Amino acid sequence: MGRPYFYALGAGGERGVAHMLDFMREGLERTMALSGVRSLAEIDRELVRWK
Image (cartoon, rainbow, N blue to C red; front, side):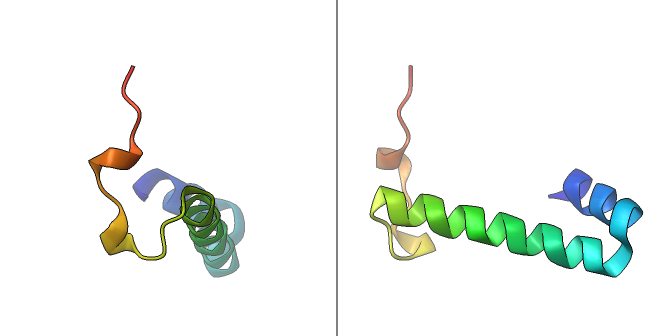
């Protein structure tokens, strides 16, 4: 999260960081919903497909 935070801070200041955090949160929530996971506690190694 460090690099995106600093890029957002440099590009948009406080509003840029807030936008980046919202973007990341929405992406995580969408991925969790598509995976059938309702909470962070439900995420485990079974959800990762190793090649």
